[in-house]
Amino acid sequence: MNKESIYSYTLPALEDWFTGRGHKPFRAKQLWDWLYRKRIDDFNEITNMKKDVLEELKENFTLQTLDVHSKQVSKDGTMKFLFRLKDGNLIETVLMRFDYGSSVCVTTQIGCNIGCSFCASGLLTKSRDLSAGEIVEQIMHVQKAMDEEQKEERVSHIVVMGIGEPFDNYDNLMAFLRVVNNDSGLAIGARHITVSTSGIIKRIYDFANENLQVNLAVSLHAPNNELRTKIMKINKAQPIEKLMEAVDYYLEKTNRRITFEYILLDGVNDGKEEALELAELIKDKKKLSYVNLIPYNPVDEHIQYEQSRKSNILTFFDTLMKAGIQCGVRHEQGSDIDAACGQLRSKQMKKDREKKKQVQ
Image (cartoon, rainbow, N blue to C red):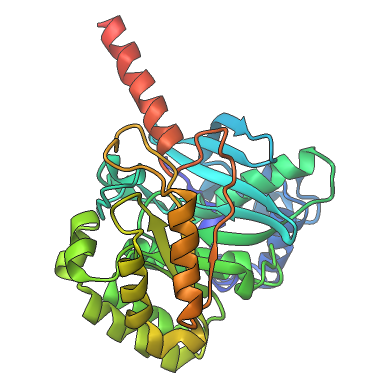
């Protein structure tokens, strides 16, 4: 029997599970304390529940749906984990260390159907969504790795920007957010969590109505439809003008700042003309918007793209600033390892295919 991940359950859902089996609802908080505060690896470590309750938990749930296949550690302290799931699929998770805390970038899908032409994540199309538990468990593995270092360090920030489109796995994403944000669990503040979308318009409206303090980032990468469609095929079905309407709704509904992600590709979207066009596109939103300029991390399979020259990055930045647009250039993390989303997974899958050929 394939057991369900215990980490998929929000606290109210777990309370319902216990009461549905004739147990007191307070058992859910007891269990959460063991899961997220004591961070157990085995249900047998629980000492304040009766044997019959523990047996029910062991019969129905698992604490482990993924295993560490490999781990890379950068000179700057960045850690990249390659996890193998129970069905054999591979996913990636990254720990990045900053002055303000430790941030984990999580994956939400196996593969990606968005198909951005510069991205390693989309080299393989989506085979399935991750469950909420599989997403939560990425955080747990990283936190336990930090616990082993005995530095009393905790995951303080989360970015949902790994492999996959989070809004294409919306229900599991929302369950994940409610688990990691809950004060009885990991208690990661909503304002320390950012969800990134390539622009699934319907879900931007839905997310605005969730009444959460979680941050939203939109992967824009181009200031007009013609250029954006060339590098992001999602733009053909969900063009910029409709995307901006959804952004306007989000800003009006939440009064929260939104981030526009903009990867700078040499000679493609990094000219002063594009910077001026971008400033014009979001000028009416500039009080509640921020542009995150991202130096491109080259991917072997996308040789047509190169990282922008520093002079271009500086000119782009200066142009936006002079137009009154708040912006910054993302500091590169893990540049000496397979830091781009999907790179480590892609390389391992190539190795696996080569091994199969040799066996045959």
